[in-house]
Length: 288
Image (cartoon, rainbow, N blue to C red; front, side, top):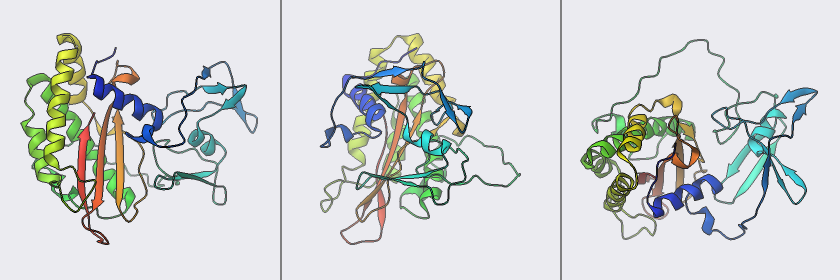
């Protein structure tokens, strides 16, 4: 099943699927090609059968272009026990075999790290959609990247549930209140801060466009799936390194029974408050 979005939103989703982040399609050095996915190609690692998978555990196929076979880098690196990291500011991918132990980890993380050895488990509770939740502590970038990723992953669930509510009711006030509380206003000394009003208006357009483009039954199923989103359903996307200007976080959710083009993306961006400042504030938080 597929939910239809407005032309603008669909274009953003396609860019996200192909390049990982919105806006990357405009960067220099990107060339559109025609290639084929060949699911007939099988693989072995150290004599054992191996299947590349994405962060959700779905099988991935080899891509064949001009007679050369290409594999998903992170999945392949993990199978070979190689640490992989991405510096999005410089667009450099690093591979390091020095401390590799050959254990495959979550494809959605930005770097490969050994899993916890703790045997204790804590049940995951879906966060409330209320704006009085823990959203107040995301206004400023604090803690490690791992800590912020975990914190924002919870917020992604909150925004997805709000999106589902808005699609059913047409009311975007909860989302607007969330952004007004957490996202900074437009700042004259920042070339990248668009302000909370900008994203509130974009969200209203997204809801209106999606409601108009879909049948009542499709919209209802899609919205219900969003309302039922759980923390374990969220895939961590591209998490940029923190540099002197910003740090970006992205997450995705593909509703059950809907195809990849219906995937919803959630983005958070922190920008330095003033030049040479050590304080980074939330400048963007939006779904598409």
